[in-house]
Length: 111
Image 1 (cartoon, rainbow, N blue to C red):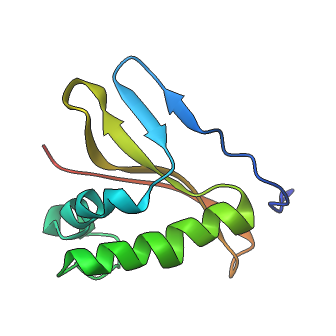
Image 2: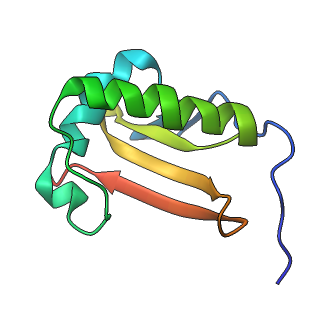
């Protein structure tokens, strides 16, 4: 299997379809990250701890998402449902240095 090591920024500013927009997270998205990160159904099979405060969501954005964008040129993207202009979760790639591979993943609010 060939492996591609991330070397330069490749993430566009946003990806848009008829119903969705995918874009990088901003620090202002912390309430939305808290909403899906504190949802037991969303987190059920992830292995991640349930968020218990919006501050934890800010930390994730600052210490996980932003560094991934900078270091690897890509990372998880905010998934915005256009009819409601609401972040309903995330989708996208995440580089996993321990495996030297990228993971494709998503989390969405059940509704």
